[in-house]
Image (cartoon, rainbow, N blue to C red; front, side):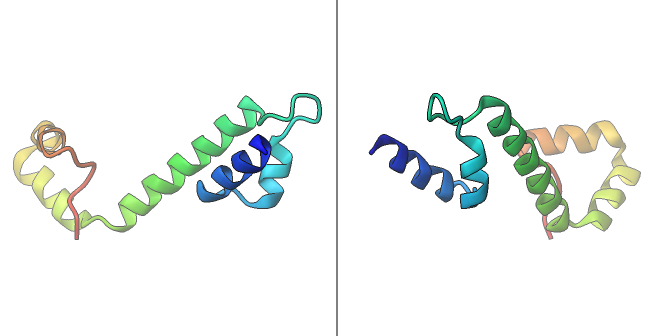
Length: 86
């Protein structure tokens, strides 16, 4: 029953059934830490790509040219953002 709940949780996190099957070790019936770590890294890359896709690069470049890289970094940190939104 616990394994079924774990499978459902992994599906909600975006894992396909094939990926979930690959995650499980036949002996312990628990996901492989190495494979979970790889999936997290892939997901982080996808998230960064989505953030960039949703950013206003022209506004970022203009702000950096007018105020400098440090000012841009401080602004993003202060506003807890990674980029200027469209």
